[in-house]
Structure formats: structure tokens, C-alpha cells
Length: 510
Image (tube, rainbow, N blue to C red; front, top):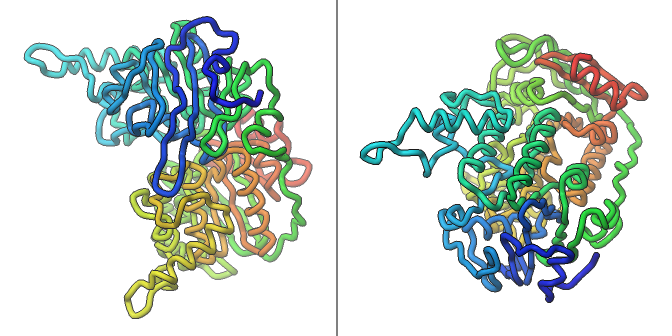
């Protein structure tokens, strides 16, 4: 249903209840760009509203307005029909608005319980924190969401999936009326995703209003009651999820029909470029042997905890293997650091782009040129014009959307941050590029662009290793697939062997 946001009644539709929260004609601008243009959004008690749109459509800006991080330049926020303001995050929390973000904002050196209750811990006599009560409350919340995590554990000792569950527990530790879920399943296994669905139903039964942001249409159509679509900072559609098809949602998102078919490739695999033999780590992986060829896309599939990312980090020199041999173009090499890896033509685009892939406080052009300063400097002095030229070349190839190359990476959407990280490493002109979950958190339009670019890189002779948890992506982009389970290679598949059934069977050990 296409619509214009002038009439609030259009947003209410058939609902007769007063919304818990509403945005009315909200506008937000930044230098050189309008992030939101008179958008409206309503959230009802006991209902899930899916907020859908490409990266850069304004979804993240809405979340930051609802959580008090940004202040709107125009329009208003209503709680229970009455106008209100969220001058800061504390005010939003006091009003019962909480968010579970795609990139978990937690503290590694604190315990799980301390992270859950940071800022609102239970207190006893003399105003001191009641540690025992905090531990018990944290344990109860974790049990309620099916998380088998000891509240005493330091956060840094948990994996990505468990950190995400701690973030969910933190959001639920306040008596929230509105729960914002921003890509909540991005780092979860299928079992954990199913448990999250159960949790969402429990929250609905408690009368909480849920704003659900996801690029995965199967999730949207499974749990959402309503949808709202943003495009280029404007509201373009809203209605009941039962009245819209996947194709109609995609067309509203991008303003055009988008084919979900993966790009056609010639599969002209060239000579052997990388050989890995006997790679082992004391705790993460063992017996890793494979070869990689020029022009090949080699997929790595597995469940959360299979050891794929840990192995890729070892290839890039972040961690050291206990044993193993690495050959590039037939020559044995030893990689003790990322600098060694880059010097030998291996680059790594990490899954956690916010912490490992980019320096978010620096502008786009400095992030892109950081590993290539030798090409943009002379006699020890950086040449600004050369930096901009190099950054522009690679960001344009990836169709990066930003007001300018001076924009700080932290102000970009998740998809555009990913493009900055990919551009950074491509600028080093590598032989092998490792892409760890390259389309995680990216909308359907940007996914297609990344897939096209991956196909282009392979056609130019670059060897690509792609780690992905998405079966359609693994099947659509890979020449061969290595399936990992519990730190070991469970299978190597090619051609007709690459089926959803075989991937899941080998990954699960069935």
C-alpha cells in the first residue's frame, strides 16, 4: 500500500487502540543530507511492526531518535497519545523505550550481570549495589530467554551469539513498554533464532509494542503484524503484513523490481594460488587442508561456533596457528601479523565491521587509504589529493552512499560501513580476499550490488573466500563449498553436491 504520510489516520488503519508510541511527521537533517523527511510511525501494544528499507533509508536514524540519541528537527513523538521529548537516552528508558542493537554495545571487562544492570543495578543499604540480588535477577532473565550463561562470566569470554543474548537480557532488564529489535538474529544460530521467536511472542502477550528491523523477509512475514517501509528518508508504505507480498515490499523498498537471482558467472577458475596444509590451533580448529584458485569463489559454511571466523583470523595473522603450512603461488610463507598477510596479498573483511573492520571516528577517505599509505604519500608526507582519488575510485565501484568522503564512518548505515571496509582492502590490490559474512545486515539492494562486485572480482582473477551462514548465498555464489563443524572440515562440496540438505547435514553432523 503506497501512501503519503499526511494523515495519521492512515497509519492507524483498522487498529482501534491508542498507539503506545507514535512519530508524527518527523524530520532529521545532517550537513548535506536529509536523513528523515516528515516520516510517521506507530507502534501498538501487543503487536510487532516491521520497519523495512534499504541501508540509508533512515531506519537507524529513527532508532536513535526513539532512544534519545538524536533530537528531531521537526515533528513530534507521542506516548499514549500525548506529546513527549527524549532529550537523552535516560529519558527514553524512563519512558519505557529500550533497544536491542545489531552491533552489541556492551563492556568486555564487566561481568554478564554487570552488563545487564549497568546504570540501574538493584541497591541495598546505604545505596550500595546489591551484588547478590543483581546476580539472581540476571540469572532469572537469562533463563527466561533460554540463555545458558553464567551471570558471573566476563563478557570478553563469550562468543558473538552469547553477547547478543546478553544484549537482549539487558534490554529486558528494564520494564520496557516499547522494545526495538535492530537485526536481532544477525549473529544467532537457527536454534537461537527459534528461541527468539518464542521470546517475541511472550513479549506480545505481555502487551509490549515491538519495532522489528530486519532484512530477512522470512523473519518479517513470520512474526510481524504490521509493516512500515522507508525509502531515501521518506515513508512510502504501511499496512498489515497479511495484505502485502514479498515482491510488493521489495518494490516499495527500492522503487523498482529487484531480482533475487545471483549474478551469472563464467566460473573460469585459474591456477592454484593458495594452499593450506595441516593448520591447527590449540582450541579453535584442527586439520584444515584446502586449495584456492585464481578466479574462484570458495564458500565456507557452518553453524555458529564451527570455527570459520577463527580460522580466517589465523590466515590473516590476527592469531597464530600451533602448526600448519601456507603457500602462496607455490612459495611457502609465514604470516605472523596482518601486515605480513597484506604484504603477501591476503586481506580480510571481518564479520564485526564496527570493531574490527573500520575506525568509525575517522572519515571515509582515511579509512579506505589507511592500509595503502605508501601509495598516497611522498617523502613521508601524505598527499590529500591522492588519498581522495584512491578512496573515490573504490567507493564508487561499490556504489557507496554518503554525503561526502569527509563523512565519518560512524555516521554511515551498516551496509555502507561494510562497503568502506571492502573498499579499504581492495585498494591494496590483493591476490586473495576473505569476506566474512559480507552481506550480514545489508538490505536486498545492497546485497545484489555486493554479489555483482564479488563476481566481477572473481572474473578479474582475484581469489575469493566467502564465509556465510546464508544457504542461498553459499549456493548462489560459490564454485566450491567447505563445510566446517566443531573446528574441522566436515565436507568439501562442488557442483550438484551443493544442496541445502547436504550443507545442513554436514554442518550439523547428521
